[in-house]
Image (tube, rainbow, N blue to C red; front, side, top):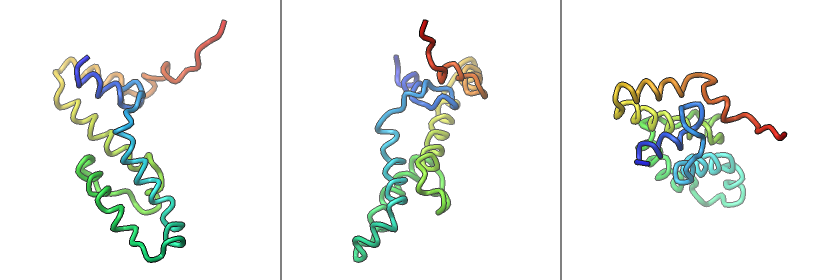
Length: 125
């Protein structure tokens, strides 16, 4: 399998992938959500540490990957808020690099409920 196939398969099911997410693709959104959810606690434990300066390089890296602005403050503790823009960027990259037939397939498997079978529990007979 080539890199394009691996990239598509690592997309969430809702974006035409198999939902087998890559750890390196989830690390940055997970880190950013974790830092923002523990931000108040970190300020209580270490009031002298400037947490914003610690997380700033990660936010800059996220902006480079997602071509987006950071989520609003109330959503920054949710990993999904950091992950979706990166996933959308990868999806758009795949769309633009695809032939017309590949693009049609990708759009079709990204349609609502097209991947529902992947979320179904297996039957035990």
